Image (cartoon, rainbow, N blue to C red):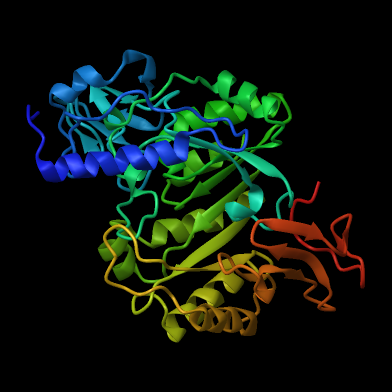
Length: 398
């Protein structure tokens, strides 16, 4: 580890402090915590997975046994089986996510009980539109991600290592206690990628379930089938970001793969848990009509017409400052294609005061749920059915 920090690095660290101050400070009575220390001397090379002096900065209270791994049989090497990266990790090093580490031939998570962002959010912000509308969710994240999306809006935490961001020790039972104090019926694992803090998420969800709190995972869907099936035993809903419909996009823009995400969606369908899909439309990269049409046909053929699909605008951020904001007309066209291909519930997720924020009955077109940003009003939905024609509307309504 370097003893000195360059002026450019100092600027980056200040940016991270400002971000964390903004995201962690308590606001409007929300439960959050503030950082008391800077992060100078933190290792900032995203590509490095080898521990240096930073090892001493990982408090043992945040270290716990990782799940879903196996020993390789020689030199203490382990293989992670949590996500499709299937990282082969030598002793003393970490997987690509940066938060799971081989310690003397035992795989450990470094972010157990170590959230770096917490907020109370409307469930519509996730977005989940057919899951307990008007409810609030106690939302949290740790550092780290198993993707490297160039457009990530939360890159300050998703691309950080756990030792770069100070944190308080908040075990699962404490998170449940805090959620109950805020009277939030939902626990949401979000902001970064919940897959990489699997153990922490699972244990919070399990503890929350005992207190009648429901858990939702907001994820990129890059997880192996068995861990996903096990996790769904304690979850109530999942939102998957379908980044695009080409493997080229996943590899070049996200450092991932497409097909494992499609497999996750099919697994959720098999299990029967509620799930919704979000597609961020980026100009010139995944906004083509043919790609969108092929994606919608895949959804209808493999998942059915009732899974809600949210199209979102891209805003220049992180490593994609060179591309323009997505025109509203572009995602309106995506909406029209999705409807034409047979998807019943298609939304424009972050275009406020637009008609397509609302939920309409797919049979009689009656307005069922009105949305204006995060303001939500149930207009004509009664016991999960359209108050006009009686059509059952898929979702979790109570």
